[in-house]
Length: 111
Length: 402
Image 1 (cartoon, rainbow over the protein chains, first blue to last red):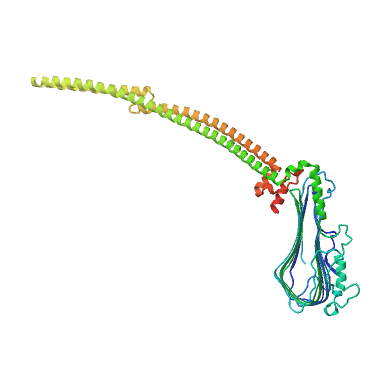
Image 2 (image 1 turned 180 degrees about the vertical axis):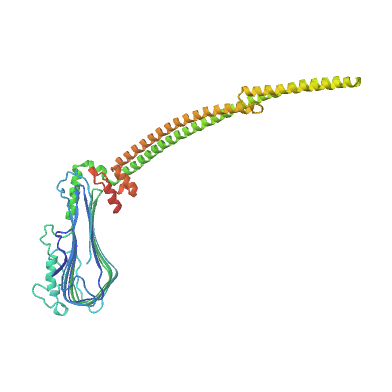
């Protein structure tokens, strides 16, 4: 099963959307345009946080770039996008005298 | 704290052909999903033909997919949108701009800001699909967010001094105070600038006054000179006139003598004419003497004689007055300049102190303040990442880019 991206790279996600489809026959009349964007920020008094994201799909009998007019058979696709708040390394320390920093990350993937 | 999910389409899905769907949207307990599975339906309504004891292949795959996190120590998600089975025999699907969004946001005053979101966009989609089995799942977990918030509140509990920078009300008050102080600072700045301007004006006025004084003195001295010249001229003219009058009187007397002797013969007549000529010569000599007196007077005053007497005296006085006035004006201008510069320096110091106070009030570095002014960024909207939350240049730039 071909993989585009790594849909399972992030485990234990705080938010995620997933879908799986299987079809006996699938034909595109035109090339679809998709866009996935993962965004977020982690701002804590304890320090800088990060956003860990993942987006990707597993495909069976379906190429990464589909062609209009072609009938694909016995298709399976599983897609998942997930994001996890990654806490600051110092999050266990609650003394609160550390500097505040913010981090924003934005990752995009075209599928 | 909130979790949101949104799915929208500018043009809803269009389906054609025969469809048979089964979908379940709920927040179930795991393993307790209700609704009839495809494998539980009768063969007439069952699309999947590979039904076994464990269900259809799609059901088995979905179970593996949906239950993947069942051993997750975090337990069930707090928000779950579960579409366990969507089955369609045949469908022609047209979609325009389908957006699916899920976002998790949490904020505790200005201490904690958490945001995690997924935006999925599907543009135009035109597909023919047969024998479809689809599942969809959306999960949001809040326990990590809750832990972060809990940790933050613990931090605040242990460091109550942080509270003074937290509350929105306090922040507003602080902002108002900051504005007031800013305005005060600006007023002080204006006073300083005004003082500088006033002193500069005083200096200029002083210079101008001294200049006018010089010109007045110059003019007065010139008038004195002119008066002196005129007086001297008058003296000359009076002297000349007096001598002329003497001559005329003498000539007239001599004429009268000649007329008296007119009848006495030619000799007497010639004698009278000679006397008249003599008197006339006396009168002319007197006039010449008076002219010399006038020239002498003018010469004593340094003039070139004649009508130049008054001009020469006035010229000297004017020149001297001009020189004095120039000296006075120059000295006054220098003094005024010094005063103006001192006032400007004072105003600058006041302005700098005001900026320092502003920077302290905004809890920002001066460089960050300057950058914020250049980029037109409101520091109230910037979160500081420096020591003790101090706003740095990087914070300002990041806020401007955000």
